[in-house]
Length: 308
Image 1 (cartoon, rainbow, N blue to C red):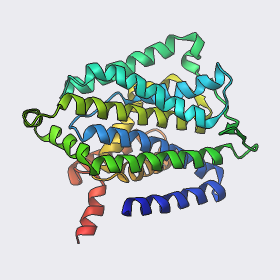
Image 2: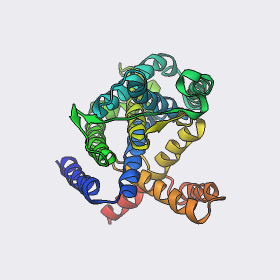
Image 3: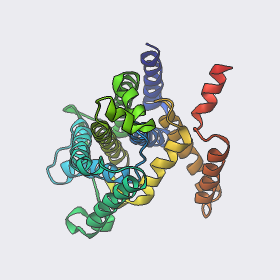
Image 4: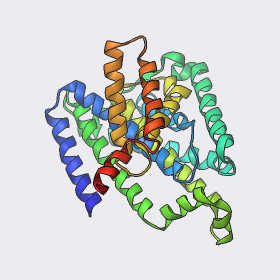
């Protein structure tokens, strides 16, 4: 009940932002929601003790799947694009997960990164997909209803808010049930889980597929927000951003990825404006401070306050 009430409050705030906020804030909020959804999937995977440095693979697949509907098939419905992004990335994760679910620790991380860079190389070399320049996309309807000119991003934010909060509630239910406890058991002692009759491979495989589908949804949201896709969506630095945000927020709550994504975007915006040549260093120092003083992420501050 508390999660549902918090989601209702968050939805009301996001609706207010979509209807009343200036365009720059609407755009930034869409980026926060998109990255928060991707990191939420990464947190699902981290519950099993694994970190993927290749979520840019599914982020890019989701973005390109949404864009290709507009560019190649002239389908301009935002809802269909969001569904296509999540479905395409989820399908790719289901296929690659058959292999990756066998690996752990650094092998898993490096293999996931390798697949992401393979996609990046294919996109860069593919003239049909715009090569290094990418291409634009246009969504003009939502569930078949035409979107008024100038209101596109506001409508996309409303649709993205529903998707993000729906995903967050589903993950919250997952964490609170048997599957969530099984995932943390795999992280703590995989061998004992196998002795108890459960399948660590299946747990990792399903969580990897969930993480892939959520990354695809986030990629489609960013594609709608920006109106353009390019190979940078699959580059290793994009995957690194998601890991940074996951560490920044921690894995204790479904709200942590969105809070961390908001802080990350705000810090990057401010650092880019006032220190454009060293903003990466500013983020790096922030990462070191988090690891040293808050190793379980910023959400641990919220937990400490609640405990007090």
